[in-house]
Image 1 (cartoon, rainbow, N blue to C red):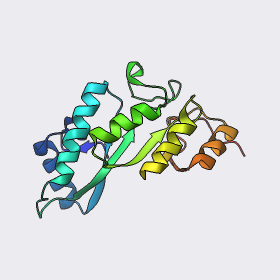
Image 2 (spheres, rainbow, N blue to C red):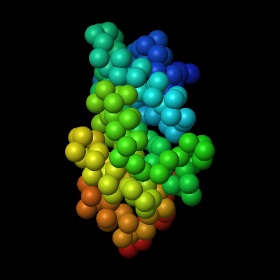
Image 3 (spheres, rainbow, N blue to C red):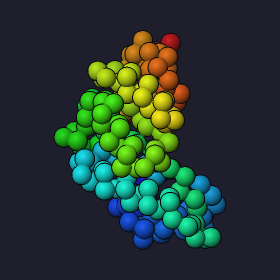
Image 4 (tube, helix red, strand yellow):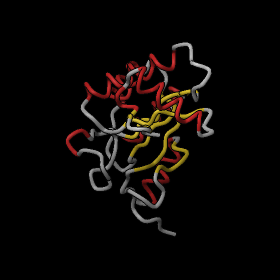
Length: 169
């Protein structure tokens, strides 16, 4: 989830993340993933560092547990980007993924990726090596490209029927 009560996980501050976590707990959520959005690399790295700090601290008893990070971007399709700013969408890259992984100190658990982009299959394979579950999303992939992503290790879809090409049977 991206945020709640006027705060976004991209703020990356203990105050914002604690407020979100308390709100979620009050409404029955016990655990969640902080879902990032496509942003400048500096902003994204700052947010990931702050989220990692929040995960690693001693949690308050009245908060939902922040389990990890869901990267929604930067490896998305320009055609199906939705609200993600086009200037910050990047081609899938093992090097960029490694940089994000380091900033998050290993707390990335899920990544949405458009598998039709060059470099996506190698990036999915690297994500799997790191224990990151890959989800096809914000994608214009055709059936063959989606099947290739599944063979490479993708296991789910983000925004099924939304921000993606129509499914073909």
